Image 1 (spheres, one colour):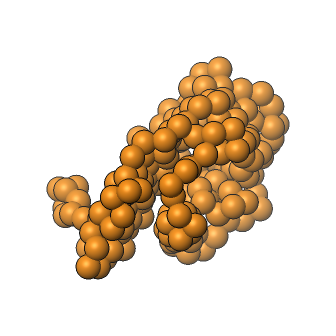
Image 2 (cartoon, rainbow, N blue to C red; image 1 turned 45 degrees about the vertical axis):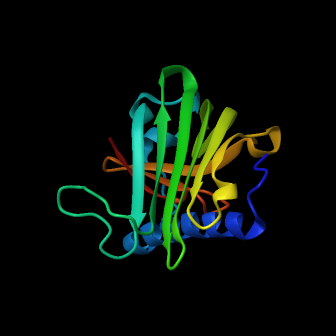
Image 3 (tube, rainbow, N blue to C red; image 1 turned 135 degrees about the vertical axis):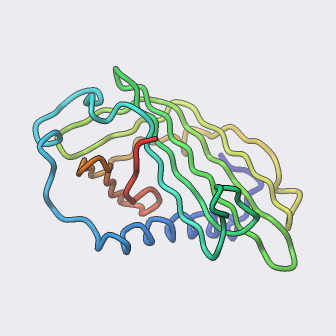
Length: 181
């Protein structure tokens, strides 16, 4: 359970993630209903084509320089790592520069298992942490273990298309187009 994180703080974090997902969908015109050939009939642990690390990032304004050095600003990234046999890790990083207040950053990480049932990818987290640095409210800076209510299975629609992993998350938090790292 994320004790100490205000409703407004949670709303801002979810809002930033939703913005990131929306930017990805807008850039691609959204998802079609087609499912790639590798996803149609697979059931069980992760298909070999999904094994590895997949990432997605979004930022507002001129956030990073051409060398990849990033200054404080607003943005976020989501990373999924899938291993042979169904091992899975998920992380969501969010950062926002609040005018007159300072930097607010959070990192939610979870580890567990993943399985595929046709066009549905199911992640079942077993453990997780939430780390926060809050320049506006230092009392909200810290590390927390995620509780059982934060570790519920999540189902995504998924598709591999020309080397990109397209995910649709019913909550909107992790919807986007991911590239292999």
